Image: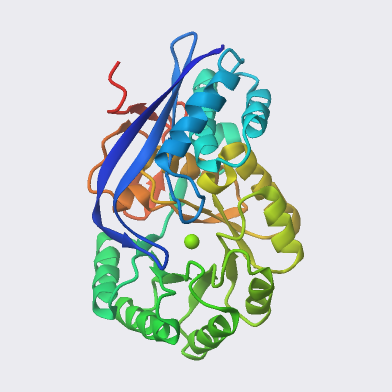
Length: 361
Ligand code: MG
């Protein structure tokens, strides 16, 4: 079963509420969509989120990488040799991880479809249910409390609270949210590189002293400040999660062996897809470092692929896969069910997406 062609489209989906982190504000998911078509008529879908401030990728660069380099390199290859195709994808162009992710996901979707199995079963088996948190954007305290209470009322049991813009005042945000939602809700904190190392330790000490029961603190300092990550991790009883610091399996080994984090956030847009993400999961397994499956501002196609990977692997014991939950509509047919925080993986082949509006033929 050979790759006949690779199509590129685009989807714009408005968000329920603007997505604000210490790095950016967005009002839409505005993503590149990929369809890989085989010579016997099956097709697989993938998606790339242009996240310039994290991956350096923008829509024209993603489209260009796929149309000018990746597609000509892969057309004609045998999809059942998923290892060979993935190795070619990894080496045909440097970096460009979002473009690679979109194509990689479509390849894995197509591969699983060729086997007639849902992707999570092809990748490992594991569990059909994945529980995700939902992001609470950084804003005024009142707005963040209101958003948190609303999310809990909708059924979410885990909140990921974005901070990192106001230093020590972030403690007030988290305290107010904890007071409002009660003790049963899991709270994760993501600073998106917004603190320096000493400031981070000072803030984390206050969170510890206030007994706020924080599940983890994500990327407290700059992605490239490894010494800072080591310092914060050594001085925190709350687990530290590396996000922007880990793109590749090599990064994961380096961060883990340096004790620069306690947990790793795997995102398909950073790894360039499932092929490399599987390696990070294996590294986590080797060093007994649990992983979170995360996403950028993505819609249901790539988030579904992430959910299948999270379901397949026991070492991925946390999920931050709230993209579809942030979108105001679901424009696709098929795929996993997203019911507030619970994701129920499809039993249909692949990632389950059956139709995508940007491809009408
Ligand atoms: Mg993050």
